Image 1 (cartoon, chains in turn yellow, red):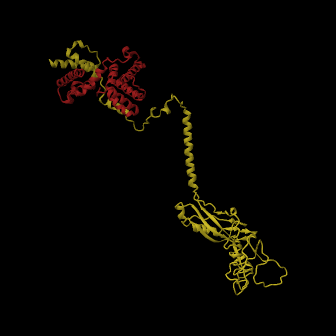
Image 2: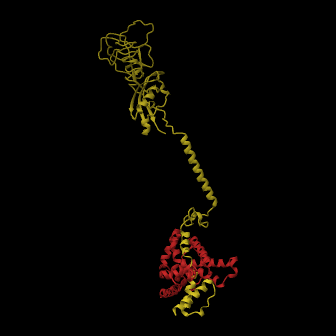
Length: 344
Length: 178
Protein backbone atom coordinates (compact mmCIF):
# COMPACT_ATOMS: atom_id res chain seq x y z
CA UNK A 1 0.00 0.00 0.00
CA UNK A 2 2.75 2.40 0.94
CA UNK A 3 4.50 1.90 -2.35
CA UNK A 4 1.28 2.98 -4.08
CA UNK A 5 1.32 6.17 -2.00
CA UNK A 6 4.97 6.72 -2.91
CA UNK A 7 4.06 6.38 -6.60
CA UNK A 8 1.07 8.69 -6.26
CA UNK A 9 3.15 11.35 -4.52
CA UNK A 10 5.86 11.10 -7.11
CA UNK A 11 3.22 11.54 -9.83
CA UNK A 12 1.97 14.68 -8.05
CA UNK A 13 5.51 16.01 -7.79
CA UNK A 14 5.99 15.43 -11.51
CA UNK A 15 2.87 17.47 -12.25
CA UNK A 16 4.03 20.27 -9.93
CA UNK A 17 7.44 20.36 -11.55
CA UNK A 18 5.91 20.46 -15.02
CA UNK A 19 3.60 23.29 -14.01
CA UNK A 20 0.46 21.36 -14.75
CA UNK A 21 -2.64 22.04 -12.70
CA UNK A 22 -2.83 19.30 -10.07
CA UNK A 23 -6.28 17.85 -9.46
CA UNK A 24 -5.82 16.70 -5.92
CA UNK A 25 -9.17 14.92 -5.77
CA UNK A 26 -7.76 12.04 -7.78
CA UNK A 27 -5.24 11.15 -5.08
CA UNK A 28 -5.29 9.49 -1.71
CA UNK A 29 -6.12 11.87 1.18
CA UNK A 30 -2.69 11.23 2.65
CA UNK A 31 -1.08 12.39 -0.57
CA UNK A 32 -3.44 15.34 -0.70
CA UNK A 33 -2.23 16.41 2.76
CA UNK A 34 1.37 16.39 1.55
CA UNK A 35 0.58 18.36 -1.58
CA UNK A 36 0.98 21.89 0.01
CA UNK A 37 4.39 20.92 1.33
CA UNK A 38 5.53 19.85 -2.10
CA UNK A 39 4.20 23.07 -3.63
CA UNK A 40 5.97 25.18 -0.99
CA UNK A 41 9.28 23.41 -1.50
CA UNK A 42 9.01 23.62 -5.29
CA UNK A 43 9.68 27.37 -5.25
CA UNK A 44 12.38 27.34 -2.61
CA UNK A 45 15.32 29.64 -3.47
CA UNK A 46 18.58 28.15 -4.58
CA UNK A 47 20.62 27.11 -1.53
CA UNK A 48 23.36 29.63 -2.27
CA UNK A 49 20.96 32.53 -2.88
CA UNK A 50 20.36 33.33 0.76
CA UNK A 51 24.01 33.71 1.72
CA UNK A 52 24.88 35.48 -1.53
CA UNK A 53 22.22 38.11 -0.98
CA UNK A 54 23.31 38.65 2.60
CA UNK A 55 26.89 39.16 1.50
CA UNK A 56 25.70 41.58 -1.13
CA UNK A 57 23.75 43.55 1.46
CA UNK A 58 26.16 43.97 4.33
CA UNK A 59 29.63 43.40 2.95
CA UNK A 60 30.92 46.32 0.90
CA UNK A 61 32.52 45.36 -2.37
CA UNK A 62 36.10 46.23 -3.17
CA UNK A 63 36.23 49.77 -4.48
CA UNK A 64 32.63 50.47 -3.56
CA UNK A 65 32.03 53.91 -2.15
CA UNK A 66 29.90 53.64 0.94
CA UNK A 67 27.46 56.54 0.92
CA UNK A 68 27.32 58.67 4.02
CA UNK A 69 23.89 58.36 5.52
CA UNK A 70 21.93 61.31 6.73
CA UNK A 71 22.08 60.01 10.29
CA UNK A 72 25.82 60.53 10.26
CA UNK A 73 25.78 64.11 9.05
CA UNK A 74 22.17 65.20 9.43
CA UNK A 75 22.72 68.92 8.99
CA UNK A 76 24.72 68.26 5.83
CA UNK A 77 22.28 66.04 4.02
CA UNK A 78 18.86 66.75 5.40
CA UNK A 79 17.48 69.48 3.21
CA UNK A 80 14.55 70.03 5.54
CA UNK A 81 16.62 70.84 8.59
CA UNK A 82 14.47 73.10 10.66
CA UNK A 83 16.91 75.74 11.78
CA UNK A 84 19.16 76.36 8.85
CA UNK A 85 18.34 75.58 5.24
CA UNK A 86 21.07 73.76 3.39
CA UNK A 87 22.48 75.65 0.44
CA UNK A 88 24.59 73.72 -1.99
CA UNK A 89 26.58 76.87 -2.68
CA UNK A 90 27.90 76.69 0.86
CA UNK A 91 29.73 73.53 -0.04
CA UNK A 92 31.48 75.31 -2.89
CA UNK A 93 32.41 78.26 -0.67
CA UNK A 94 33.68 75.92 2.01
CA UNK A 95 35.72 73.96 -0.49
CA UNK A 96 37.17 77.16 -1.92
CA UNK A 97 38.14 78.47 1.51
CA UNK A 98 39.78 75.20 2.42
CA UNK A 99 41.66 75.17 -0.86
CA UNK A 100 42.82 78.76 -0.26
CA UNK A 101 43.99 77.85 3.22
CA UNK A 102 45.94 74.91 1.86
CA UNK A 103 47.56 77.10 -0.79
CA UNK A 104 48.47 79.68 1.86
CA UNK A 105 50.04 77.05 4.06
CA UNK A 106 51.95 75.57 1.16
CA UNK A 107 53.25 78.91 -0.11
CA UNK A 108 54.22 80.16 3.34
CA UNK A 109 56.07 76.92 4.00
CA UNK A 110 57.88 77.32 0.69
CA UNK A 111 58.73 80.93 1.48
CA UNK A 112 60.10 79.99 4.88
CA UNK A 113 62.16 77.24 3.30
CA UNK A 114 63.69 79.75 0.88
CA UNK A 115 64.11 82.48 3.49
CA UNK A 116 65.68 80.99 6.56
CA UNK A 117 65.08 82.88 9.74
CA UNK A 118 67.86 85.37 10.32
CA UNK A 119 68.72 85.76 13.92
CA UNK A 120 68.96 89.45 14.53
CA UNK A 121 70.50 91.20 17.47
CA UNK A 122 69.15 94.54 18.42
CA UNK A 123 71.61 97.39 18.63
CA UNK A 124 72.99 97.99 22.04
CA UNK A 125 71.34 100.69 24.06
CA UNK A 126 73.22 103.22 26.11
CA UNK A 127 71.59 103.68 29.42
CA UNK A 128 71.57 107.38 30.05
CA UNK A 129 69.78 108.48 33.16
CA UNK A 130 72.19 111.23 34.15
CA UNK A 131 70.17 114.17 32.78
CA UNK A 132 67.52 113.37 35.34
CA UNK A 133 69.93 113.48 38.27
CA UNK A 134 70.39 116.64 40.40
CA UNK A 135 73.56 118.58 39.99
CA UNK A 136 76.19 117.51 42.53
CA UNK A 137 76.96 120.35 44.98
CA UNK A 138 80.50 119.36 45.94
CA UNK A 139 81.46 116.49 43.69
CA UNK A 140 81.10 116.18 39.96
CA UNK A 141 83.81 113.65 39.29
CA UNK A 142 86.98 114.36 37.45
CA UNK A 143 89.93 116.08 38.88
CA UNK A 144 93.25 117.48 37.96
CA UNK A 145 96.82 117.81 38.90
CA UNK A 146 99.90 119.71 38.22
CA UNK A 147 103.22 120.79 39.59
CA UNK A 148 106.44 122.29 38.36
CA UNK A 149 108.77 119.36 38.84
CA UNK A 150 109.76 120.40 42.34
CA UNK A 151 111.77 118.05 44.56
CA UNK A 152 109.24 117.94 47.30
CA UNK A 153 105.55 117.27 47.33
CA UNK A 154 103.00 120.00 47.21
CA UNK A 155 102.04 121.55 50.48
CA UNK A 156 98.58 121.43 51.96
CA UNK A 157 96.29 124.37 51.46
CA UNK A 158 93.09 125.66 49.92
CA UNK A 159 92.21 124.91 46.35
CA UNK A 160 91.88 128.05 44.25
CA UNK A 161 88.53 129.30 43.08
CA UNK A 162 86.51 127.13 40.76
CA UNK A 163 85.55 128.70 37.47
CA UNK A 164 84.18 127.71 34.11
CA UNK A 165 87.47 128.34 32.45
CA UNK A 166 91.11 128.61 33.49
CA UNK A 167 93.49 131.33 32.40
CA UNK A 168 96.13 131.01 35.07
CA UNK A 169 96.85 127.77 36.79
CA UNK A 170 97.22 127.89 40.57
CA UNK A 171 100.63 127.97 42.18
CA UNK A 172 102.01 128.00 45.71
CA UNK A 173 105.43 129.14 44.72
CA UNK A 174 104.98 131.95 42.26
CA UNK A 175 107.80 131.92 39.78
CA UNK A 176 106.80 135.11 37.97
CA UNK A 177 106.35 137.87 40.45
CA UNK A 178 105.80 140.50 37.81
CA UNK A 179 103.32 139.27 35.30
CA UNK A 180 102.28 141.56 32.49
CA UNK A 181 98.63 140.65 32.90
CA UNK A 182 97.70 139.52 36.35
CA UNK A 183 94.72 137.10 36.48
CA UNK A 184 93.49 135.20 39.47
CA UNK A 185 94.40 131.53 39.30
CA UNK A 186 91.43 129.17 38.95
CA UNK A 187 90.68 125.51 38.48
CA UNK A 188 87.89 124.25 36.27
CA UNK A 189 84.84 123.10 38.09
CA UNK A 190 81.39 124.25 39.18
CA UNK A 191 81.78 127.80 40.50
CA UNK A 192 79.30 127.01 43.25
CA UNK A 193 81.74 124.63 44.91
CA UNK A 194 83.54 126.08 47.89
CA UNK A 195 86.05 124.20 49.95
CA UNK A 196 87.27 124.81 53.46
CA UNK A 197 89.59 127.69 53.99
CA UNK A 198 93.01 127.07 55.47
CA UNK A 199 94.27 130.51 54.73
CA UNK A 200 96.83 129.61 52.11
CA UNK A 201 96.74 128.13 48.65
CA UNK A 202 97.73 124.48 48.29
CA UNK A 203 96.62 120.99 47.64
CA UNK A 204 93.64 120.15 49.89
CA UNK A 205 94.60 116.51 49.84
CA UNK A 206 98.26 117.00 50.67
CA UNK A 207 99.47 115.59 53.98
CA UNK A 208 101.80 118.38 55.04
CA UNK A 209 101.39 122.12 55.41
CA UNK A 210 104.90 123.09 54.37
CA UNK A 211 107.38 123.86 53.06
CA UNK A 212 105.83 125.67 50.16
CA UNK A 213 106.07 123.69 46.94
CA UNK A 214 104.11 123.39 43.72
CA UNK A 215 104.68 119.67 43.78
CA UNK A 216 106.41 117.16 41.64
CA UNK A 217 103.96 117.19 38.82
CA UNK A 218 104.18 118.83 35.46
CA UNK A 219 102.33 121.33 33.35
CA UNK A 220 101.77 123.98 35.96
CA UNK A 221 99.42 123.90 38.86
CA UNK A 222 99.88 122.18 42.18
CA UNK A 223 100.46 118.55 43.04
CA UNK A 224 101.89 115.42 41.53
CA UNK A 225 99.73 115.21 38.45
CA UNK A 226 99.68 117.14 35.23
CA UNK A 227 97.57 119.63 33.39
CA UNK A 228 97.34 122.83 35.43
CA UNK A 229 95.08 121.62 38.16
CA UNK A 230 95.54 120.67 41.78
CA UNK A 231 96.28 117.19 42.97
CA UNK A 232 97.43 113.91 41.57
CA UNK A 233 95.16 113.76 38.57
CA UNK A 234 95.32 115.04 35.06
CA UNK A 235 93.69 118.22 33.93
CA UNK A 236 92.66 121.59 35.26
CA UNK A 237 90.49 120.36 38.14
CA UNK A 238 91.11 119.28 41.70
CA UNK A 239 91.69 115.78 42.88
CA UNK A 240 92.87 112.43 41.62
CA UNK A 241 90.69 112.29 38.56
CA UNK A 242 91.15 113.95 35.27
CA UNK A 243 89.48 116.33 32.90
CA UNK A 244 88.54 119.06 35.33
CA UNK A 245 86.13 119.21 38.19
CA UNK A 246 86.57 117.75 41.60
CA UNK A 247 85.89 114.56 43.40
CA UNK A 248 88.18 112.13 41.75
CA UNK A 249 87.39 109.48 39.17
CA UNK A 250 85.71 110.17 35.91
CA UNK A 251 82.87 112.48 35.07
CA UNK A 252 79.38 111.10 35.17
CA UNK A 253 76.70 112.42 32.91
CA UNK A 254 74.70 115.15 34.52
CA UNK A 255 75.60 118.18 36.54
CA UNK A 256 76.57 120.09 33.43
CA UNK A 257 78.13 117.13 31.68
CA UNK A 258 76.40 116.26 28.41
CA UNK A 259 76.05 112.59 27.53
CA UNK A 260 78.09 111.13 24.71
CA UNK A 261 76.24 109.98 21.58
CA UNK A 262 77.07 106.85 19.69
CA UNK A 263 77.93 107.48 16.04
CA UNK A 264 79.24 104.05 15.13
CA UNK A 265 77.84 101.05 16.97
CA UNK A 266 77.99 97.80 15.04
CA UNK A 267 75.91 94.95 16.46
CA UNK A 268 77.60 92.36 18.59
CA UNK A 269 77.69 88.78 17.34
CA UNK A 270 75.86 85.89 18.88
CA UNK A 271 77.88 82.92 19.92
CA UNK A 272 76.91 79.53 18.49
CA UNK A 273 76.62 78.13 21.99
CA UNK A 274 74.19 80.83 23.10
CA UNK A 275 72.16 80.52 19.88
CA UNK A 276 71.76 76.78 20.28
CA UNK A 277 70.78 77.26 23.92
CA UNK A 278 68.36 80.06 22.92
CA UNK A 279 69.93 82.36 25.47
CA UNK A 280 68.60 85.92 25.36
CA UNK A 281 69.02 88.88 27.65
CA UNK A 282 71.07 91.93 28.45
CA UNK A 283 74.77 92.37 29.20
CA UNK A 284 75.35 95.50 31.27
CA UNK A 285 78.70 97.11 30.73
CA UNK A 286 80.44 99.94 32.54
CA UNK A 287 82.33 101.97 29.96
CA UNK A 288 84.59 104.99 30.05
CA UNK A 289 84.23 107.10 26.95
CA UNK A 290 87.18 109.37 26.57
CA UNK A 291 87.37 112.85 25.07
CA UNK A 292 88.47 111.18 21.85
CA UNK A 293 85.09 109.44 21.59
CA UNK A 294 86.51 105.94 22.01
CA UNK A 295 85.90 103.48 24.77
CA UNK A 296 88.86 103.10 27.12
CA UNK A 297 87.77 100.93 29.94
CA UNK A 298 85.05 98.33 29.64
CA UNK A 299 83.89 96.26 32.56
CA UNK A 300 81.01 93.81 32.90
CA UNK A 301 78.42 94.91 35.42
CA UNK A 302 75.84 92.18 34.69
CA UNK A 303 76.87 88.98 32.97
CA UNK A 304 74.87 86.78 30.58
CA UNK A 305 77.39 84.01 30.01
CA UNK A 306 77.68 81.66 27.04
CA UNK A 307 80.42 83.93 25.64
CA UNK A 308 78.00 86.82 25.15
CA UNK A 309 79.87 89.03 27.65
CA UNK A 310 83.03 88.79 25.57
CA UNK A 311 81.10 89.43 22.37
CA UNK A 312 79.52 92.52 23.94
CA UNK A 313 82.89 93.86 25.09
CA UNK A 314 84.37 93.14 21.68
CA UNK A 315 81.62 95.10 19.98
CA UNK A 316 81.68 98.06 22.39
CA UNK A 317 85.43 98.45 22.04
CA UNK A 318 84.87 99.20 18.38
CA UNK A 319 82.20 101.78 18.95
CA UNK A 320 82.82 105.47 18.37
CA UNK A 321 81.09 108.29 20.17
CA UNK A 322 80.63 111.97 19.94
CA UNK A 323 82.28 112.61 23.29
CA UNK A 324 80.60 113.93 26.36
CA UNK A 325 81.12 117.61 26.93
CA UNK A 326 81.33 119.86 29.90
CA UNK A 327 81.19 123.56 29.32
CA UNK A 328 81.65 122.85 25.65
CA UNK A 329 84.82 120.86 26.15
CA UNK A 330 85.01 117.09 25.55
CA UNK A 331 85.51 115.21 28.75
CA UNK A 332 85.76 111.58 29.73
CA UNK A 333 82.63 110.11 31.21
CA UNK A 334 81.58 106.81 32.62
CA UNK A 335 78.38 105.37 31.28
CA UNK A 336 76.47 102.13 31.54
CA UNK A 337 75.80 100.39 28.27
CA UNK A 338 73.13 97.76 27.86
CA UNK A 339 73.76 95.29 25.07
CA UNK A 340 70.58 93.42 24.21
CA UNK A 341 70.84 89.94 22.76
CA UNK A 342 67.57 88.78 21.20
CA UNK A 343 66.77 85.86 18.92
CA UNK A 344 64.02 86.36 16.34
CA UNK B 1 11.18 32.98 13.09
CA UNK B 2 14.54 31.36 13.08
CA UNK B 3 14.99 32.51 16.65
CA UNK B 4 12.44 33.59 19.16
CA UNK B 5 12.69 37.34 18.67
CA UNK B 6 10.68 39.49 21.04
CA UNK B 7 9.51 42.99 20.21
CA UNK B 8 12.06 44.74 22.43
CA UNK B 9 14.81 42.60 20.88
CA UNK B 10 13.70 43.55 17.41
CA UNK B 11 13.58 47.23 18.34
CA UNK B 12 17.17 47.00 19.51
CA UNK B 13 18.15 45.23 16.30
CA UNK B 14 16.51 47.93 14.22
CA UNK B 15 18.18 50.73 16.17
CA UNK B 16 21.51 48.97 15.78
CA UNK B 17 20.94 48.59 12.02
CA UNK B 18 20.01 52.26 11.79
CA UNK B 19 23.34 53.15 13.36
CA UNK B 20 25.42 50.62 11.45
CA UNK B 21 24.23 48.76 8.37
CA UNK B 22 26.28 45.73 9.33
CA UNK B 23 23.73 44.96 12.02
CA UNK B 24 21.11 44.55 9.31
CA UNK B 25 22.30 40.96 8.88
CA UNK B 26 20.36 39.71 11.89
CA UNK B 27 17.15 41.33 10.70
CA UNK B 28 17.75 39.73 7.30
CA UNK B 29 18.17 36.29 8.81
CA UNK B 30 15.04 36.69 10.90
CA UNK B 31 12.82 37.72 7.99
CA UNK B 32 14.30 36.21 4.84
CA UNK B 33 12.07 33.11 4.75
CA UNK B 34 8.96 35.17 5.36
CA UNK B 35 9.68 37.71 2.64
CA UNK B 36 10.73 35.06 0.15
CA UNK B 37 7.64 32.93 0.87
CA UNK B 38 5.42 35.97 0.44
CA UNK B 39 6.91 36.80 -2.92
CA UNK B 40 7.35 33.26 -4.25
CA UNK B 41 3.73 32.34 -3.52
CA UNK B 42 2.61 35.28 -5.67
CA UNK B 43 5.19 35.02 -8.44
CA UNK B 44 5.43 31.21 -8.80
CA UNK B 45 8.83 31.57 -10.41
CA UNK B 46 12.05 31.02 -8.50
CA UNK B 47 14.32 33.31 -10.49
CA UNK B 48 11.85 36.22 -10.36
CA UNK B 49 11.13 35.56 -6.69
CA UNK B 50 14.85 35.73 -5.97
CA UNK B 51 15.19 38.98 -7.89
CA UNK B 52 12.28 40.60 -6.10
CA UNK B 53 13.48 39.35 -2.70
CA UNK B 54 16.85 40.88 -3.38
CA UNK B 55 15.17 44.13 -4.38
CA UNK B 56 13.05 44.18 -1.24
CA UNK B 57 15.98 43.75 1.13
CA UNK B 58 18.07 46.31 -0.69
CA UNK B 59 15.23 48.79 -0.40
CA UNK B 60 14.75 47.93 3.27
CA UNK B 61 18.43 48.49 3.99
CA UNK B 62 18.40 51.79 2.13
CA UNK B 63 15.29 52.98 3.97
CA UNK B 64 16.00 51.54 7.40
CA UNK B 65 16.61 55.08 8.71
CA UNK B 66 13.05 55.98 7.81
CA UNK B 67 11.54 53.16 9.81
CA UNK B 68 9.80 54.37 12.92
CA UNK B 69 8.33 52.09 15.51
CA UNK B 70 4.68 53.04 15.58
CA UNK B 71 3.17 49.82 16.83
CA UNK B 72 3.40 47.92 13.55
CA UNK B 73 6.02 45.19 13.60
CA UNK B 74 9.04 45.31 11.36
CA UNK B 75 7.81 42.32 9.35
CA UNK B 76 4.71 44.31 8.32
CA UNK B 77 6.98 47.07 7.02
CA UNK B 78 9.04 44.52 5.09
CA UNK B 79 5.96 42.81 3.63
CA UNK B 80 4.64 46.19 2.56
CA UNK B 81 7.84 46.74 0.57
CA UNK B 82 7.51 43.19 -0.80
CA UNK B 83 3.90 43.80 -1.77
CA UNK B 84 4.89 46.95 -3.64
CA UNK B 85 7.65 45.05 -5.40
CA UNK B 86 5.21 42.34 -6.50
CA UNK B 87 2.75 45.03 -7.53
CA UNK B 88 5.38 46.80 -9.63
CA UNK B 89 6.41 43.48 -11.15
CA UNK B 90 2.91 42.68 -12.33
CA UNK B 91 2.32 46.25 -13.46
CA UNK B 92 5.40 46.21 -15.67
CA UNK B 93 4.66 46.12 -19.44
CA UNK B 94 5.84 42.53 -19.82
CA UNK B 95 3.49 41.26 -17.12
CA UNK B 96 0.52 43.63 -17.46
CA UNK B 97 -1.88 40.99 -18.69
CA UNK B 98 -1.02 38.59 -15.91
CA UNK B 99 -1.87 40.83 -12.95
CA UNK B 100 -3.99 38.81 -10.55
CA UNK B 101 -6.39 41.06 -8.67
CA UNK B 102 -5.78 39.61 -5.22
CA UNK B 103 -2.09 40.28 -5.35
CA UNK B 104 -2.60 44.04 -5.54
CA UNK B 105 -4.22 44.12 -2.14
CA UNK B 106 -2.49 44.91 1.15
CA UNK B 107 -0.50 41.96 2.52
CA UNK B 108 -2.68 39.88 4.79
CA UNK B 109 -1.50 38.12 7.89
CA UNK B 110 -3.47 34.94 7.15
CA UNK B 111 -2.47 34.42 3.55
CA UNK B 112 -0.31 31.37 4.36
CA UNK B 113 2.97 33.25 4.18
CA UNK B 114 3.88 32.41 7.76
CA UNK B 115 3.13 28.72 7.29
CA UNK B 116 5.15 28.52 4.09
CA UNK B 117 8.05 30.25 5.80
CA UNK B 118 7.87 27.79 8.69
CA UNK B 119 7.92 24.84 6.27
CA UNK B 120 11.14 26.16 4.76
CA UNK B 121 12.69 26.41 8.18
CA UNK B 122 11.51 22.95 9.21
CA UNK B 123 13.35 21.57 6.21
CA UNK B 124 16.56 21.92 8.20
CA UNK B 125 15.23 19.47 10.80
CA UNK B 126 14.79 16.64 8.32
CA UNK B 127 17.19 13.69 8.33
CA UNK B 128 20.03 14.31 5.92
CA UNK B 129 18.99 11.71 3.30
CA UNK B 130 15.34 12.88 3.28
CA UNK B 131 16.42 16.49 3.01
CA UNK B 132 18.83 15.72 0.17
CA UNK B 133 16.17 13.88 -1.82
CA UNK B 134 13.64 16.68 -1.38
CA UNK B 135 16.16 19.34 -2.42
CA UNK B 136 17.24 17.38 -5.49
CA UNK B 137 13.70 16.54 -6.52
CA UNK B 138 11.72 19.70 -5.75
CA UNK B 139 14.30 22.48 -5.74
CA UNK B 140 16.66 21.21 -8.42
CA UNK B 141 13.86 19.54 -10.45
CA UNK B 142 15.76 16.34 -11.10
CA UNK B 143 14.10 13.03 -11.88
CA UNK B 144 13.92 10.10 -9.51
CA UNK B 145 16.22 8.01 -11.68
CA UNK B 146 18.88 10.78 -11.70
CA UNK B 147 18.79 11.04 -7.94
CA UNK B 148 18.91 7.26 -7.60
CA UNK B 149 22.06 7.13 -9.70
CA UNK B 150 23.68 9.97 -7.74
CA UNK B 151 22.93 8.41 -4.38
CA UNK B 152 23.38 4.83 -5.62
CA UNK B 153 19.98 3.88 -4.35
CA UNK B 154 16.95 2.33 -6.06
CA UNK B 155 14.23 4.51 -7.52
CA UNK B 156 11.80 2.98 -5.05
CA UNK B 157 14.03 4.01 -2.17
CA UNK B 158 14.17 7.58 -3.50
CA UNK B 159 10.36 7.74 -3.81
CA UNK B 160 10.08 6.36 -0.27
CA UNK B 161 12.50 9.02 1.09
CA UNK B 162 10.56 11.71 -0.78
CA UNK B 163 7.26 10.56 0.78
CA UNK B 164 8.72 10.30 4.25
CA UNK B 165 10.33 13.71 3.98
CA UNK B 166 7.01 15.39 3.28
CA UNK B 167 5.32 13.36 6.03
CA UNK B 168 8.01 14.43 8.50
CA UNK B 169 7.53 18.06 7.53
CA UNK B 170 3.81 17.74 8.14
CA UNK B 171 4.35 16.25 11.58
CA UNK B 172 6.91 18.91 12.46
CA UNK B 173 4.51 21.62 11.39
CA UNK B 174 1.81 20.20 13.62
CA UNK B 175 4.28 20.10 16.52
CA UNK B 176 5.32 23.69 15.73
CA UNK B 177 1.75 24.94 15.97
CA UNK B 178 1.09 22.96 19.12
